[in-house]
Length: 371
Image 1 (tube, one colour):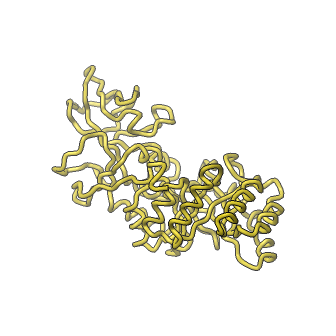
Image 2 (cartoon, rainbow, N blue to C red):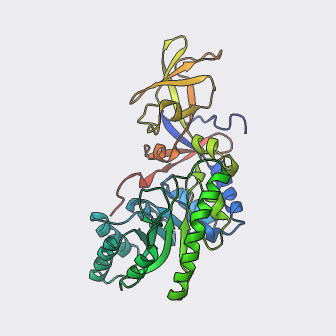
Image 3 (cartoon, rainbow, N blue to C red):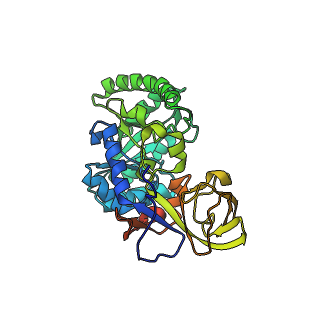
């Protein structure tokens, strides 16, 4: 790994903590992603929940990535604002979200929107709302392959559910959505498990296609199973974390060879003892759903070990011989980058010369943009 790639030499002063993103590394990750599908960008539908940033959507277009997946109405609207042609909401619209979804489609008629459903009642409700608004909505059936978070179980007769959805006149059935983020272990273990369920799904989908007379779309996987789905024909892949990467995936998905492209920049604000440092990266500045040893890694020095965490403070134990003083800068790699990014209004963009050259708004961290 490039030594001290994260170090910033800019004269621009930004109050800490802040997020720094490295555009050359983001571009490297995009190019790496495209190589993983042999240059076929039609296979890519990256999830934008990691970054939520319009300028990165503009980068997607430069690299001919024209389809995205999202989890919120705000992310979908941001994609439409930046003229991404094809946007999938991988979140079943129910309640008020159903009404907001309709408003989104009406405001951005040039964007091809679709959403997921996992039961007949929700599909009927969408169909009724579409009928009231003189619309035809594009939907995928969300399948549960074992994560047990959303989706219709593949152990049940999901082909019968599709047959019922197809009869709803104000819905257009697009295809199948699969997210198997529960799969862990080695790449061989993940591939084996994903392959077992996918082969059965693919076989049944082909039977449905014969009856429908058109090819179903299949949107499948996230980061964990990206290598498997990247190798399958007629499957759109939806990794998201690749754009910034993080310590979790760097450790557990080493075969994918993406580069970390985001760090948290903090400051030493106190030295309670000779071997104790306090920095300003509290748990309002980094995703903290995991135990303290799985929240961040200090890049300056592997001997700086997180010991205690509160809202605006992080206590580090200095086990090494390096000396630090109050006011020194600390660089940290988050363990889970997606919710970390959502804690910040802006990210600071660092160029190859290690200078801060721009800032990008994390626009879709808001639950609403205009709808």
